[in-house]
Image 1 (tube, rainbow, N blue to C red):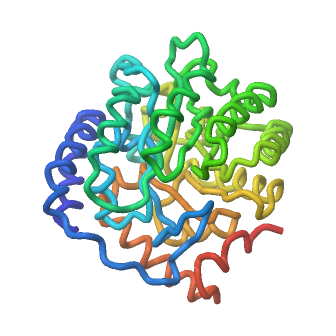
Image 2: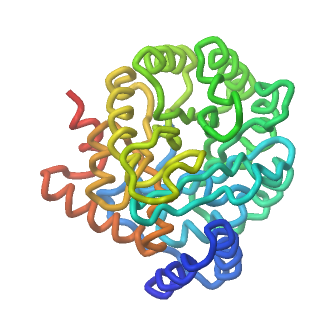
Length: 347
């Protein structure tokens, strides 16, 4: 694993998007030769929305947009891998440069714009999988779509049968107008369309929300989620806010992820736990870089967590380190397992 961490360090000398594309190629080439991840300690196991996760640490969407390397990433120890965001039709995304490392802040700004090969390419890749591991697919709408809800319906119909769960991404800041789908009326229509499409099938549906929402918006989203009977909410996507940052790239437009997102996204997570209780599974995302961070999200109500930005700076060995640290934190705080800790910090 130290070899891969060293390679990650070398890749950081390249422009960010070029480094990312090369990382995908290296992961794909290495996949057949990577051993399976060691069996996880049973205290890390989590059961959520009908699935059994070996550990709660997942790879967030954005890393593997076209579902090219989920099996390779699972071998680094992730409990689950979320691919996407995938749109019905291929699209190039926004003009480059569109991905920026804010090294001084442990952060990244992206304005990728759902660049991906489309649902047919993602479906081919998912069908060609040879490995195991739980894989989710994150779906979105094309930038110039005349009917964005229909885009989600198309993506769900094509990709849901090939994944363990589906995430509905209505919270990216990089597709103009997309976040409007978080409004009560639009969101009700969207989730009703998807739950009707799956009928009696049990494919879990998760909703990914933005961190830039006021209490009224969160109240409305919670109402819609309860009424829709979807299985989960991912808190949260990247933020358009700019807290105190030191990097000269801080004013680049786009979504901010990484360390500065940790505190605000955790507060939104805690608020959603208070609104939804235990009826809906929450996944905590935003700034996780240690076992202590993971436990903070879990205490705030997350049954599972996801990370991406910290991998840019620490390499894939981070996954095993987080799991070791999380076990130590659970023992320190007197929890027998992850499930016992979920929501324990919510008053």
